[in-house]
Image (tube, rainbow, N blue to C red; front, side, top):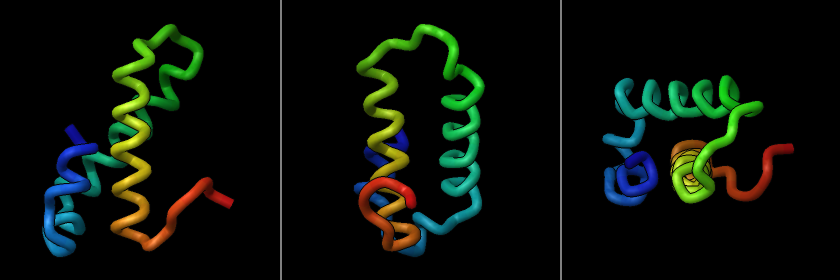
Length: 65
């Protein structure tokens, strides 16, 4: 869902606390499950949503570093 929201929301909406909380919670969920088997498709869409969110919210594209 974050994937679609990150594409569809305006810049102002993207910076709303509930969107920031969703991105943060999703990141924590991924980290907490790093040793568990996850569905590849769902994981791809979750990470892609975070990727788009990061690029739009912070102007950063590509791997962190």
